[in-house]
Image (cartoon, rainbow, N blue to C red; front, side):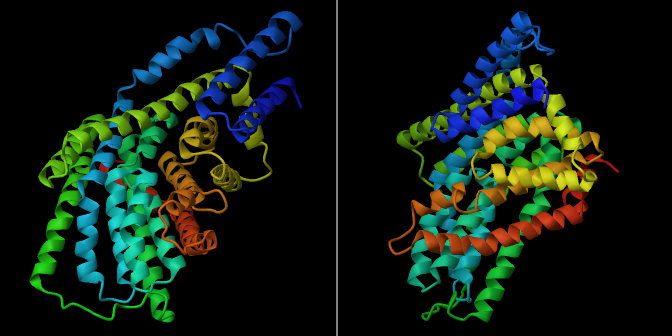
Amino acid sequence: MGLEAILVTTMFASFMLLLLLGFPVAWSLAGIGLVFGGVGFVLVEYFDADLWFTWAGTIGALDARLYGVVANELMVALPLFIFMGIMLDRSGIAEKLMHSLVRVLGPLRGGYAITVVIVGVLLAASTGIVGASVVLLGMLSLGPMMQANYNKSLAVGTACSVGTLGILVPPSIMLVLMADRLGTSDASVGKLFMGALIPGIMLGAMYILYIVIASWIKKDLAPAPKNRQPLDRRAVLDLFLAVVPPMALIMAVLGSIFFGIATTTEASAVGAAGALLMALLSRRLDLAVLKESLYQTSRTTAFIFGIFIGATVFAAVLRGLGGDDVIRDAITGLPFGTTGVLLTVLFITFLLGFFLDWVEITLIILPLVAPVIFSMGVEPVWFAIMFAICLQTSFLTPPVGFSLFYIKGVCPRGVTTRDIYLGVLPFIGLQLLGLALVFWFEPLATWLPNEVYGGP
């Protein structure tokens, strides 16, 4: 193992050690980057080490790199999309939609769970924030499903899994960050949004199909309510009025991007303004709500940009120490063809999702592996969507899936950790099946972007 490989391996090992010791991610990334920058400088200047590292090209260029991060116009979309999601959470849209759908679908066997899936997909497309979606769905649905004698594992697994769709279904803040980190026009934000649309809807449909089949085979899994209220025109009208606002917002945001009316940043402003208007019309908007929404938006944005800056320092030093060459040699040196290499990268991404949030993986790992994967002829949008599905699946995987902790915090009494784990297992299987389908049938991710933006 050469000196470059030793330094790069030690950098990653040090980062993982600091995370396990409980140090903040942003400080760990920046601190390790600066320390190893100093190590590289000492080795080159005083020990004539065989490294291409230069202080001026790494640490000395950080000011320009960091300015490029904060001056990136695309990054303006992040706080606006986050504000849109938080404001929608407080506008009561999801609650109203849940009640209207339960009125229509509740009499069916598994109707409550199907309602959660539909609301979750719309909520994912409206917010794109996993924690908010999982917690909100759990609060709205777990109580009614328990009262309807639903199986605890099915109820918790449905709410947890559907809420996790928020990082995949566009407009997703993860896809915005991925487009920036991929650094190629072949995987722009608009193309990633289009590429994720069919897989996201497909996963939602697979969830519904599973619930229908499982509740039909096992009658006590999701029983129909005993006191069924007849369906009338009023219920249908209420459902229509509940669905229109979120659908209109989604169409305004995605449609303006897809049809070239607005850039991603401009569309995020449309979404933020639309969410603010919905909160006003639903009479949920006051000074306290606005203040709290702005505070949460600022806090979340600062968290992401803190990691962004730390990852920039880490990546600059890593590249200065020859990290790109080490990683490229490690990937291309695998005894597989392109397919085997791609599967290996996805599997490693899946494992990293147990320990790291999607933000760290997107900012650190993706820029390192993507150029190598693209050089092997892999289609950028296809790879990006599979990468996103991998991260989404890792959110659910026991024992450290982030969504499991989110749902645990709002579970009613009597729901154990074992119930949560058993509940998400079928949905993990469905997500892996969805990933396999996208892997086997590339057009699931690439057909829509090619139709809209042109392509092979």
